[in-house]
Each structure stands twice: as structure tokens, then as C-alpha cells.
Amino acid sequence: GAIYFGDNSDADIGRIAYSHTGNSMRFTVNASERMRIDSSGNVGIGTSSPNAKLDVTGAIEADDKITIAYEAGSSDWELESTSGDDFTVSRNGSQKLLIDGSTGDAVFGGKIQGASGTSLTFESASGGAVKFNSNGANERMRITSGGNVMVGITSSDHKFMVNQTTANKIGGFFYNNTSTNAACLKVLQDGAGSSGPALVVRQDGSGNAITVDDGSDGNTVFFCKPEWSFI
Image (cartoon, rainbow, N blue to C red; front, side, top):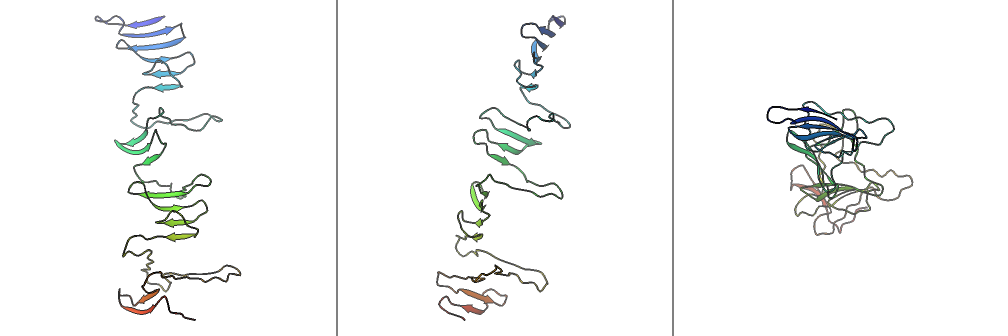
């Protein structure tokens, strides 16, 4: 059966029809089918073969917000694109999230911020590392699965290591600009029964092993050559 909505130029330009073959309800606008409800209750807009409760072919736009809820006991949320296609989240035409359809990598177009009063957690799979890249795929820092932190290097047995490979640049700089009596740097060896040194300074080049200035760069008040010994 069908209900027709026609005019002088087209007798069936609009129609609501029930198809007993396949048991579906079809809605026709401007002489073309626009929506279908199939025998299982799935609703298709822009498609005649809906694969979900709501299956839309084409863009969806909302003036306020779109809320999606699932029943208790059902599976987790899923946002899925066709195999090989990218999944993109944008705001005001500006891309904020891209999930590459080929690699599965996620690309963010803004900052990641935790809610007020909560922690922001970055977690890798078991045995994996957390890597921080900048300027493309250039790795700058890594935290291994064992908790070692490395800057400028990708492999180390030490808990914290900085590798400076640029000439005439300082590998690390500690700066205390407060008017307190606190030390800028404190090295403490507090392991029970430990006999190792608290600080090791090694110079493999020809410069001083230790240089102390009076606050003015180049105005040295104390220095130690690598070949010197102090006991």
C-alpha cells in the first residue's frame, strides 16, 4: 500500500509506501526515495540498506549537540569509518582530531587537557614506551616501559639521561631565580648500604672537568682538570 502526494506536474512526487516484499516502509520526496525503515527496524537516510538502528549516508549537522547513549550491558562506544577512510573531528571547520584510515594513527589539532582537579594520564601498552615527537616524526623524549626517561637518545640503562648532540650547546641547565637559601641542585645518595658515589663527573675531552664562576660567564673562580686528583 502507498499514500501519494502529488501536484499538477507530478502525481507521485511524494509518497509513503509499504513494501510487502521485504517488509519495509519507504519515504519518497521529490520523486526519489529519501528514507527507509527495514523489517528489523533499522532506519536508513540516503541509503536503502541500513546496517544499524540509524544509518545515514551523507553529512549530519546539528545546531546544538548530538547525544548518543547505549543500554546497560551493551558494548563500548564505537565511532567507525569505512575501511581505509580517515575519521575526522573538526570544530568550526578546523580539524581537531584525525584518525588515519590506513595506519590507525591519531593526529590532534589542539591541546590535550584534563578536567579540573583530575590527572592527565598517558599510557602505553605492556612493554611499550611513551614517545614525544616534535616538528614531525622527530623523537625528542622517551619514557621506557621500565620508567627510564631519555632526552635526545632512544636507549639507555639509566633512570634519566640527556644526550646533547648540537655543538656549543649546554646539555642541561638548572636555574633557581628565587630569593631563598635553597640549593639550585642537590645530589643525594641515600640507598641503604650503598657505597657508590653521590656524583660522578667525567670529561672525555680536553676541557675542565668542573668549572665554577662567580655569576659572570667566563669569570672562573675554581676549576678542576680531568687529570687532577682531590682526596
